[in-house]
Image (cartoon, rainbow, N blue to C red; front, side, top):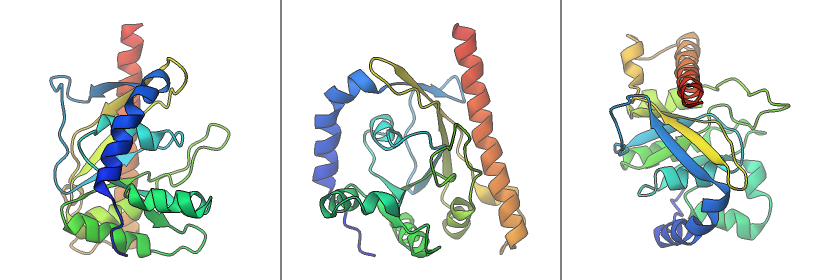
Length: 216
């Protein structure tokens, strides 16, 4: 698939949406390494996050303001209207057809990573149901194995709302090859690696909760 991203539009949306977002989405950013105050995404990079709300997309536009993140997005968003579909593609969205189990999205993401771009993945694939999140799916592991791009784990508590503060924890880069000796991992090995990524995300959650509790 041809990259349809319109970078000037991405910049325009970030700048014009900033004042409005202040009232509904004020991020407080933490780092797993407490010595870090700022973080710059490497090139290429895979941003990995839990998924709490549709507000997660604009949240990370603010957190990583100077980088366009090409998020994998479910087909339901693209089917809302032709204009909205065009908008998502223009903002860097990657179409994922979860119903057809079509893996063309992986190919699209690989092309972007090969060009040094940043791809964003919500490995849970769907929003929580009755507050219960879905387990991580292996697509992110396959991307990392194919490209050797570092994974940047991020966790958000999804505390969106008028004048509320949403908290974000950014973890240390993960190089998936550090966790396997197999050049071509089997399906079972990929599942194990995916479990490791999910555990890394849970570690960010636990650390964020610890720091917030400490603050009182």
